[in-house]
Length: 386
Image (cartoon, rainbow, N blue to C red):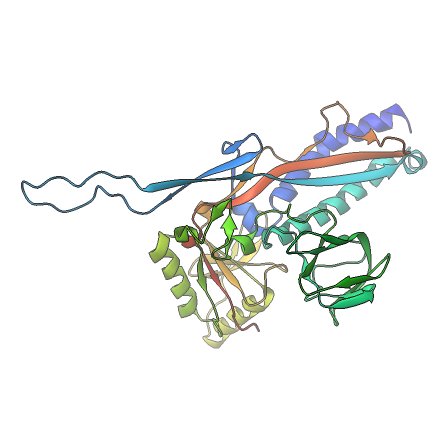
């Protein structure tokens, strides 16, 4: 490999590829594409989000000569939590680099590696957006000394993924850095390499090393009475989400009821919805049955969405079945320390791995998702899918 090739590759990574990577990852989902970014509220590695609740005390009616209402501001509580660290790490052997030099072959090889990494990163960020922050990709069934592990849903898995099996209640890692050899979507099982494992129904599967480190996704935000952003919601009920369960057959009246509850509870203005394929089909069937036109809106990032009363209804393969989220996006932000960037503090993006004939590059972002008023958004569950 010539110096020119290395310099060209480094320049390409920083000047040519990075802007495109930033755009693609910042718009990984329709929700992220329209979400506001907030860098000022990140102090050091900590996110600080001011929460206001209650009513102003200085409002009241009095007699002609009565005392004025006692001024009292709305209550304030500060949420504070650490950013999550997301990395994209690529490696290419020195031999491969040398073998591909000349005629731009090395840059083409790097481009292919980057494209694969970016597509998988987009996919994983979308999964985390709907998760609970633990990293859970699936819950295990009872497996005894086997390499074939039963899971509740195999849709998140693919051959070649590296996973851990973890006891959710304690964080104990039962199997670390195991490659998935095959996925059976019909029987909801995954086959992993290495020694046989024994699992219980309290165990979960995560990406290797991710347990407890993923984004604060919608599942965490819309689980009432949990601790969110270090605020105990059993003691701060005003910070609980608006949740409607056991919906059954979807209808425009039921959707409107959820919107109305979020507005009545916390003056929420739902302006984006997110759901599964099956719920979207059920809504399309409703429109078909009532001979209504299927209106579609184009969103930022090139996404298309059905409309309910001018509110876009987006869809994701990672949205839980039978669930419809209604989001007030003015209360939902991506808090970040910086945009996606390469590790290059030492002046090199491509660096040789210590004691190995391998070159690597690492992309990083320190961020998390924060919703300041969950009561102003809603979650409908138990919807009959089509």
